[in-house]
Figure 1 (tube, rainbow, N blue to C red):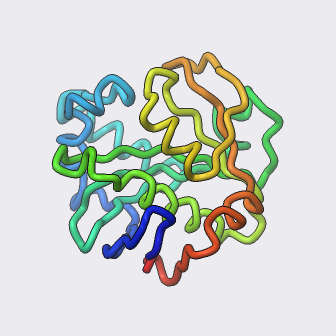
Figure 2 (figure 1 turned 60 degrees about the vertical axis):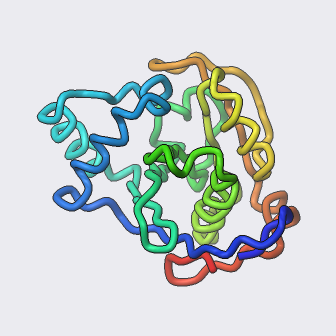
Length: 192
């Protein structure tokens, strides 16, 4: 996949979270010092298992593991915004999708990977032909991710007081995304 910053010589893939395969990994990632302040899901293992089962049973969202060259390195929640708490903060359309993400292992931080993987997931969400916009609400303190969302094509709308954080509501319009990123090829769950 090519980026405006230069060549990106990695394969990004997404697969749905599988409880037995991923619960220990996700529990570990949610206990990372760079994740805890923004996700606040550093529960004891038994509690995290119950939490993940509840998330997986929630039909308004799909959970994904993102892999870079076949190695799991990030977690995504793709959700229908009209069925989410975020719908209380803006005029959500039925086909709007939302996005949450984290990079798990520290070795992937600071490597310039956040933008390419966000681009890939955003492109994947836009494969739903009726989706015209994607929303995000990063923690207002997470300046690095807000910067990455902006570079991807998300526009800041307003600060919002969510039940678990103060977030920045951001919106990415399909037309803006594809005008900015004409080179985002996507097929069969893989960004190439």
